[in-house]
Image (tube, rainbow, N blue to C red; front, side, top):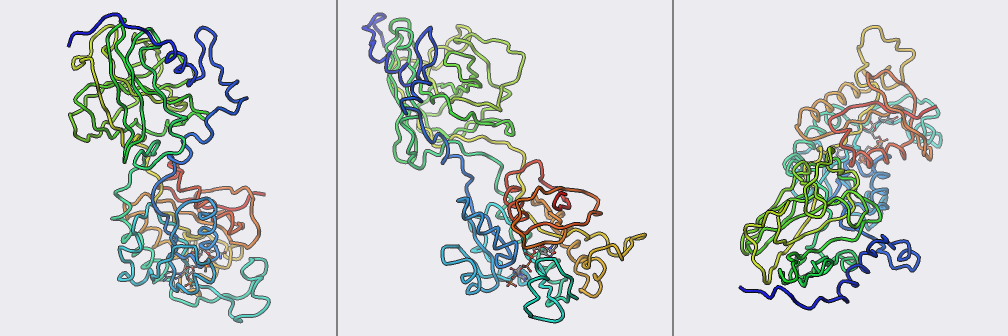
Length: 476
Ligand SMILES: NC(=O)c1ccc[n+]([C@@H]2O[C@H](COP(=O)([O-])OP(=O)(O)OC[C@H]3O[C@@H](n4cnc5c(N)ncnc54)[C@H](OP(=O)(O)O)[C@@H]3O)[C@@H](O)[C@H]2O)c1
């Protein structure tokens, strides 16, 4: 195809491009003015980044379990409660919550329906312990942890604390192990409300060229298409996000994964680590296969730093902790004047289904509430007088702590990424206290069920706590 080398330049498109991205050449950004006029994007990437999948809460009718369910609901996180009695569950948690009936001591009740689309399990089950004197007005004080009444177990701890927990983690395992720690950034399978205010074209019109492109949402994908021309010494078309209000911290991930269907062209994927319009771009070239969906992985470590297509040595790795923009480009050029070997001018088309960060540290997927004191029964040199009732009375309580420790072991051995939380005495206080953690199982104290519920939820996003066990109590 022979192209004209000189064509009329479209000054209006040039201004449109700069206007969309809030830039004036040689002066800089006027995003402050956009903000002032209320033009700036409002909810960039808020919805696309929420983790997919349901959190299963076992023991959803319990003191901690019901709070975990309620808080997950309030925080808009999909949740399912595992309860022994659905009617009781409804009375306690309302009709809006997704409930499944199962008993963790009966493996046949842990059916695929229980785990459908589950991404994590928070296990708040426990053997029912009650005051020997039975139900009385003063019983409330027992649960508040403010007064001691002689306790007894109403069920067999071996079944619930050990067999039950082991059944649960093993039944959950096949559903959980397939999940990777990745962060969805754009899921174009769903319509994105802020799409057109976020993505815009940056073609070679910015330097006098006449290439023209755009991006729009079609059914199940975003379509980057246009016509690339080498006239007027141009030769690139691209689409880019406006600078994100809140830079994304992707430092816990290895790179970006794209799901694309192209036309056989070689494209560039570009990231930026600061909010400068004309700053350093970090590029990666990838080949597409005509009309076939492919997955492209772009390790941060393989991004090539560029300034206006010249490679530079920044001496630093890509600043993945402050990702400010994403860009897709079809260009005649590779880097430092090298030509794109598959380039030919004319129409092009690239569909993008998803854009996510991949390769993060595994997240905890089985969070178990155990108890402080599980390693203390029978420990040489222990002064029982100073120990909490559960430790002192472990034998009378059917070895509850001993079986909890065995349950913990089954979680640690399961191969499922876990966190085991060992709270000190649980109370019904409002919470909001600072929690302190410890290891070695020596601390005593108390903590609010509210705070423990929130801790369990926070742990879902805490890769640093994966495969750890710790005790916890209120500070002060
Ligand atoms: N109390 C304390 O001071 C203290 C201190 C440290 C740690 N912990 C531990 O912290 C955890 C949470 O305490 P909590 O006060 O929230 O306990 P809780 O109120 O007694 O709740 C226990 C939950 O487990 C459920 N459950 C029991 N057996 C089950 C089974 N076989 N299948 C399915 N669900 C079953 C119960 O369901 P139902 O409603 O059907 O009975 C209930 O929802 C427990 O493991 C407890 O031992 C307690």
